Amino acid sequence: MKAMNMKKTAGFTLIELVMVIVILGILAAFALPRFADLGTEARTATLEAARGSVKSAAAIVHSKWLAQGSTGTVTLEGTSIPISTEGYPTGADAGIGAAAQISDDFDVTTGTISVLDSAGTGALADCNFTYDDSNGSTADGAVTGC
Image (cartoon, rainbow, N blue to C red; front, side, top):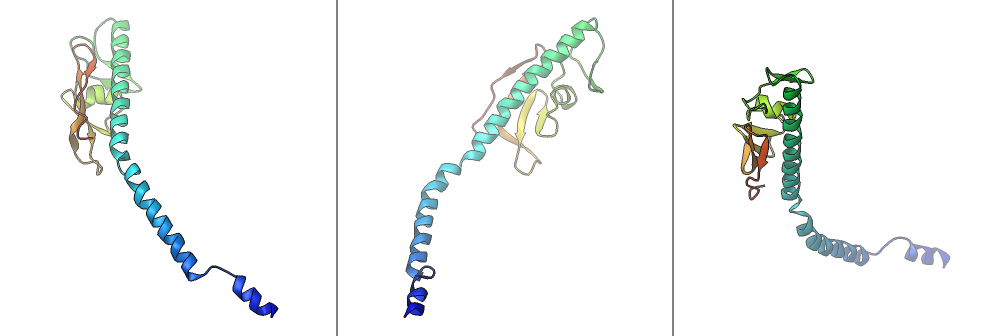
């Protein structure tokens, strides 16, 4: 008699396991849409972080250029940064891209800085901001395609 009672209470029944799976499926169906769009938010935050890095790098390069007599190129961490006539890094990858150290993660082309696609091969057309090498400022770009 004791042996039969032990068999009955050992483990879960098939219906209990099926019900748990069904409940987990329902929870997943409602929770998944909440987390599905995190990629867009992450790319937008990355773009804003790069914008802050560009502003800081432009100010540092300009300050160093002024401190060395407003002539020549500026060297940051062993990298020579090309300078515009106003003393800010150029809008090219070798200029502001190298100064802000964003060359590997962003496409820097003539003052437009864009987030790379998920493969890291091309720029997202509508996920960018602009950099002006005449005064070191940045302007809002497109964030609709992030």
